Image (cartoon, rainbow, N blue to C red; front, side, top):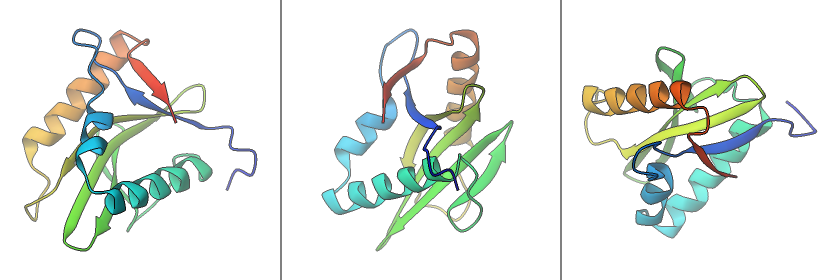
Length: 126
């Protein structure tokens, strides 16, 4: 655990549309869900992006999912930890099926690819 919180959390911003999809997602969820997600993001930052199950799970190509379950809602936020002690939140969605949908993984992979090409594709810092 990093007591000095050197890691910072950023929201991926699409380089073309300038949309910040994770923030858009957070605006749509309930206040209770949003509070729990914020607590998990803080936990992720405090542990330098290194959370294991049940909080986080590896997905693909360096991407992990933050797993925030609240009541019957299964919120998922894909993220990566990159150089410069940055945690980039790439994509968020409400999981409704037992397996993570491939289309959601593909979105996260595309967002990560865009981030790598356009390193300025990070918006807001948390």
